[in-house]
Image 1 (cartoon, helix red, strand yellow):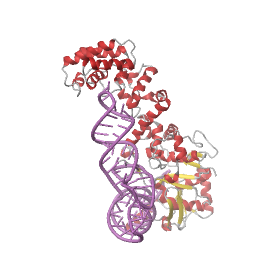
Image 2: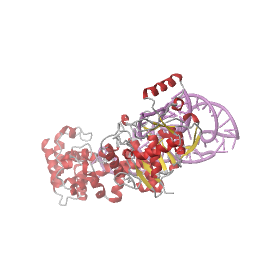
Image 3: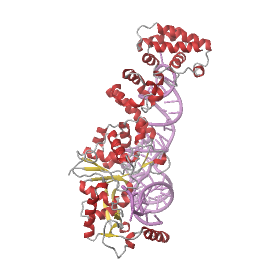
Image 4: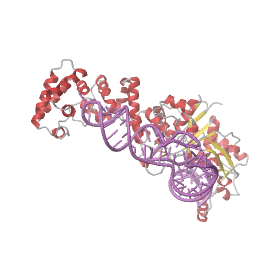
Length: 479
RNA sequence: GGUCUCGUAGUAUAACGGUUAGUACAUCGGGUUUUCAUCCCGACAACGCGGGUUCGACUCCCGCCGAGAUCACCA
């Protein structure tokens, strides 16, 4: 049987880290099996619907490289893929249940239901609607909620992550199938959709685990073969023991993207948060994930989100891309991350800057802070220079003299290559009798006034002869 | 409160009825002619607690403790 998985988000606007992971695993399962992944938009709650949220979901999946085979944009034989457009389908399936006596219209006003609930809470007994089932149920028509008629019994089932599960009759209840507004609830809609779309693996967060008996009852009443169930444990917030959420400062995927986290790193990190293949490999490309993924190695307990590891992985990926494909492959991705001062500089120059700085990037947005002095003369800050821990010991006149000596020496270089520059710098060490830490710090600061920069000869080389000498002379004069 | 689930260093995890309990991130220290970073070397650091079963348990069983999920006309 062909494997069909799905990612079925609600368009509520904000895609946090935890949500994406429940898109990654279905994707990996589908690709590994040569099956299909469906994207379905669960927009039956009109109150929570956010304009543009669907596009955000599509955009995020595309960015991560998680392409879907059926769904919005690409279409497919089982559409529509928006639940809001499938109302008549749900009503047809609901009719089956009404006909077989497994569903009934419930005219009970919400206030009354709330009272029942409170009564039970007061008595400290579980609130089960089936015990309050009205006996004067009218004929169902849109405008009245439709409830499932539960038949309490034991259920046993298997969850690919959690293992063998069982429950007693006490958890079965008359859940709402169709809401007053005519839209189905998630509980009903997802079962109908999965059946119609041929979904073989239902992968979702563990929060649905406790609803499983009710779903099983529904599959039974509808005469459906249940799919494979896969409960994905939560991703926990860095602090506390709560599920990761907006309040924990958890950034959305979009924010990480805007901060210059690579899609490869994001995918790698999230796939390996709560899953491993048993080896000690840390860096996985998408293809490797597809190849090595297995449901039975998904962790059972929740995993804590660790941004530091994400950023480490991102650095690894930046270097991996350069090592395997060259800086040219990394460069196109840096487009939105250069400082404003870089405007007007051509790609060739920026590429050269990138080639000496990429090694230090944790995220691409670090470029903004780290490369400014390549594009405009830094503000001369003599305090910064004089208070440097290696330069403190020198008097201002000594510094001035050294800078002049450096300037004269470098000016003699005919071919401004990084090798020649290194030779000249080495000769200067001998000629001045200074330690590398002293001489190089001095030059480095004079040309950049930055807290750190790439190797001195490379920086000088990229900056060019004219700019380098001008900056050194300017500092010598300013002292 | 009912039901269900989970429990290896700060974090993510590996392994196994018998190991010095492995790896990575983080932290700290050292090295690679300056800084920052990379890279390399090193250090710190864990089987929640208590009972069993067993020659032997982190591993199997029970209890406790701790944590989480769920109990909506939200998904």
